[in-house]
Image 1 (cartoon, rainbow, N blue to C red):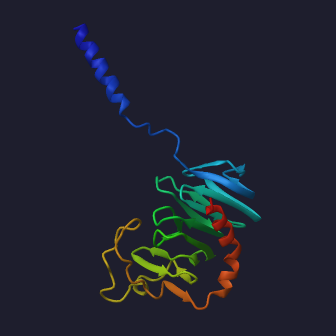
Image 2 (tube, rainbow, N blue to C red; image 1 turned 90 degrees about the horizontal axis):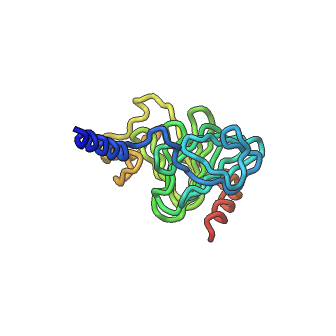
Image 3 (cartoon, rainbow, N blue to C red; image 1 turned 90 degrees about the vertical axis):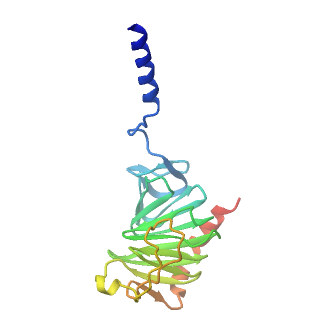
Length: 229
């Protein structure tokens, strides 16, 4: 009888070892490498601060905070806010204002903004910026390399140097692309299928985006310098 109880205790102990600790700390997204008038949660952001999944980031007027997340960089600009993703893959959600990111490959980082997901199109070095123009409208600019913007089942490629306005909330009948435009890319994020042809009413190309480029020059220099060894 005693031997049987001992065996049961050993088996129970072994089973508990394999049980995940759901209440454990969230995984770290990255580390703050530069900050000025910025916050992680309620605390002041400083170089070396670790940012965990679910942490909020915010900047005051004229402030900024730059985060290293693996093979990516995130730069939150003045009067902006975001929250880091706790889903495992490097990602953050822009809640207000503007942010820029740089990546070394297509899987390095995804920036969400409301219903939109923005990421690098390829494994080439990429720099992009996303700004809120209104509660349901974004401006997306590809400073270096090409970007992919996905909203629901529509995906738009943004070539290097180009800018697009993105309408996040349009009537369903206006958001439908032409017949046969679908490519089977229903599983964003992470799908390897070719982008679906986007509805013109949702993605609006800004011709000759020189105004946008001027805004992003400082951003580009900051993120590119951060990627140099």
